[in-house]
Image 1: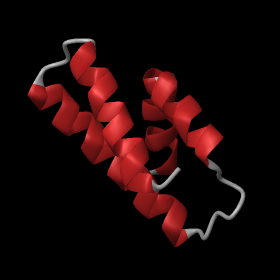
Image 2 (image 1 turned 120 degrees about the horizontal axis):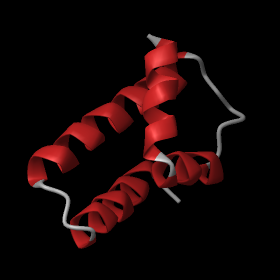
Image 3 (image 1 turned 90 degrees about the horizontal axis):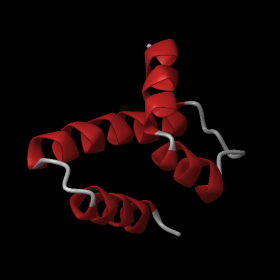
Length: 69
């Protein structure tokens, strides 16, 4: 699955769960930061399944972002 497809799928899920547009925007911003990070480190081992798991466990995802800063 391509990056944009993953983002679209995630946004759709957030909207179905009635997240506000502000929250959706904030989450997308954090996810884009993550994508930029993995591009910087050339992480060839990060696959779609890992990213989907991070989407499913957003609190864990935020903790990971905090540790990477």
